[in-house]
Length: 254
Image (tube, rainbow, N blue to C red; front, side):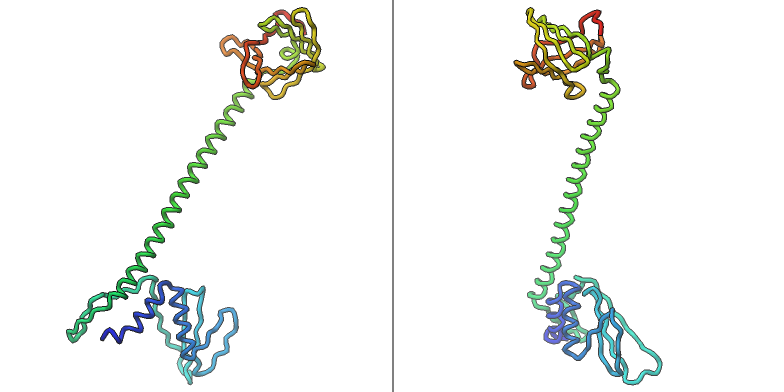
C-alpha cells in the first residue's frame, strides 16, 4: 500500500472531524454514486436493484442495495466507529517489508483536531464545575440568610412584648423629666416643663413606636432588659440612639 492509495481515505478523515461530518460526507458520496435518500417517517417504495440510504439524527447512516432478484432474504453487514477515533500509525510496515511514512501534514492535523477536541471538553467541564461551585455557594448563602431570618422571627415571636392594656397604654417617664401618657384612642399627652402637648402615636413595627406632635415626630425603639425584664423605649433621631429613655411610671393605673 502506498501513500497515494490511502490519500482518499486520509482526505475523507481530514474532512470528517465529527460523526456529523462523516454522515454528511458519506451521504454526498452515496448520492453521487446513485443512491437515493429515504426518510424514516415516510413509507418506502423500493425497486429491485435500487440503491438507497437513510440517516438518523445526522449522526448515523445506513446504506443498502436491493438485489435484482430476492430469493432468500437479505444479508446485512454493519460497521461502527466513534468520532474522533480514526487512528493511523505514522509509520507502518507492509507485508512485503516496504516502509511508508504518512505525511506530517495529516499527522499534525489529526493530532490538532484531537487536541482541540480534548481542550474544548476540558474547558466545558471546568466551566461546569465552576458553575456548580458558584451555585452551591449561592444556595448556601441563601440558606444562611433564611435560617438567620427565621431564627430571629422565631425568637421575636417567643419574646415579643405584648402591646395590650397592661403594657402600651401606660404613662411613661423620660429620663429628661418628660411624661408621656399613651391612650387607647392612639393619642399621646406629653408634659415637659409645665407644657402640655397633645399628639398621636402608632406602632410602625413590633419594635418601633412613633409619636407625632405638631412641632416634631419622635421615634423610639423598644428594648427589654434581659436581666430585670424592664421594658424601655430608646429615642432615635436619624437612626442614632439618643439619651432619652422612656420607662413605665410606677404604680400607674391604666
